[in-house]
Amino acid sequence: MKKIGIIRCQQTEDMCPGTTDFKCAGAGTMAFESFAPCEIVGFVSCGGCPGKHAVTRAKMLVDRGAEAVFLASCIRKGSPIGMPCPNAEAMKAAIEKKLGDAVPVIDWTH
Image (cartoon, rainbow, N blue to C red):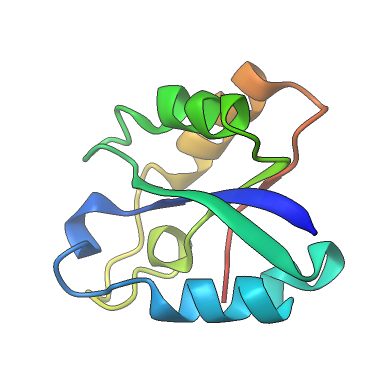
């Protein structure tokens, strides 16, 4: 079972418990299909705009066993608040730079 970490949008924490992320990861569906099924080793927020803690939290997830890091769909799609993160690309690039090629960074979950 692949161990993964998920980084979510801090602005959506009080509106979304991450239920679909957990369900899809456990079942190995949607973005988790090629990693299926997955065990979530950590579910953290980006730290608030502009993703100020995303890089250090991604590294923390890897240090705790994550073999891949996923940016929750709330970042890319903006659900449930209807506003995608304007910093998503920069955040993903910064995480990829920090983690290197050994750890894939996937920019959606469901």
